[in-house]
Figure 1: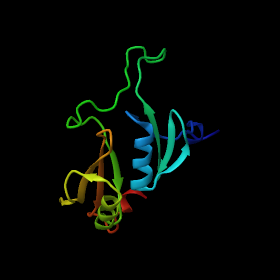
Figure 2: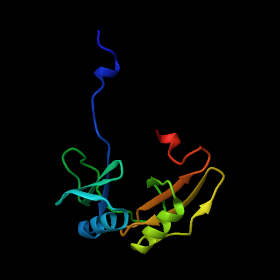
Figure 3: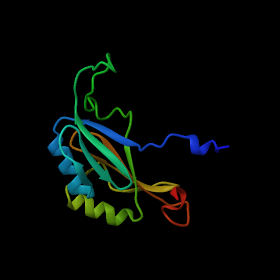
Figure 4: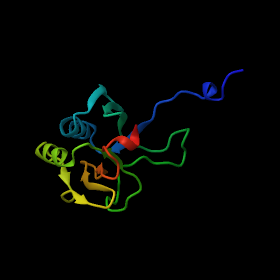
Amino acid sequence: MQSEQQDEPKFLVTVTLIVNDIGRSVAFYRDVFGATVLREGEPTFLRLGNIWLSINRGGGPTDDKPTVIASPPQQPDILSSFINLRVADMARCYELWRSRGANFVTEPKVHPWEIRCYIRDPDGYLIEVGQTTFTATPFELYQ
């Protein structure tokens, strides 16, 4: 008898960003965060830390989503999703990524459980950068 876990389908999780200019967005994630371009084109695939990003243009409905229009954020100050980057050293990442052109909303702020700040990408997507402070090491919770 096979265990229930062995019957589970295997899959990867990717995050898809709908952007205005694929080249500009790819350059941002590559140049600021060191993402690796895995495939160019529409869509372009990147490896960013332990996730994969799919960067693609917007467009109209398709046969499998007949009422959905893909579009970059229309109102960047209304949040519906964001990328969360957990870091080991907030001060180092803040200085490095700022030197590479990241547009931080504020400087890092100390909160009860973390040090946190946000970056906007070229299309207005919000990227949270946080360093966990309530565990012995910043990544302990995620291991």
